Image (cartoon, rainbow, N blue to C red):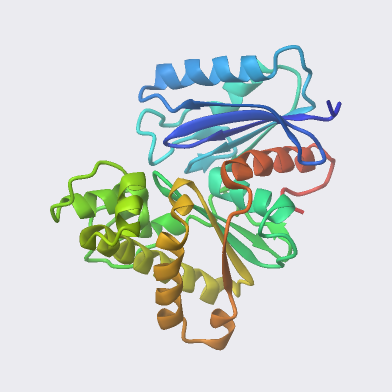
Length: 307
């Protein structure tokens, strides 16, 4: 195994994944666990996962990707979709589990964007937005070929862009956010309120694929909000490309066909219409690769994350 392998961790509202990632982007010892619902159990699960993956190996660094918001100065996370974690000292916990190596913390959306830009569907893009459509909606920006986390590390939070001030409440405390419409649980909730009897986004996608009217309408509603967020971001950042991953993106054309239809209608400016939208080519490993890439780069003196 690569002696410069990084221990990479990707923490989301549904799962926690870990793996050893080489400088060539190869993932070894990949393991996952469901995200527990209490702070104590999350900490225990994370410790068990990292200890197992790193057993007998001395990683050169640790890269942490977490849902946010983040506080990079304190090394803490307060994920909107993990209510049990508020100001959780994630960097300190990782440093305690794997002592003596540098620890890099990035948002999960930034990590997914960096991973896709490094080894996936974002290769060659000068300006791109990575989006994770899952339990929540995460996002990360690559501008001028380098990740742009912003001063606080929280740039790219497209999920909490308001697309309808009169819309439904969002878990962040605002109303009408992209996430309140387009996340898996939000689309499921919208469908259930209209009589759909399924329980999860995977079933909703399957029913939409069979033409079930409420399921089809749920994806139409969700992708319209997502398209509005993408158009707003492309207008601000002059994007070449948008790469969409996360569990809900596995629905394929059930998600992408209505999304592209709404984008075609909503994007009116020429430089916005040139933005292309692609499905992630890395799937569930995008966040791990991005966390590893961020750690590899920050361990090199003077090299910014995502360069």
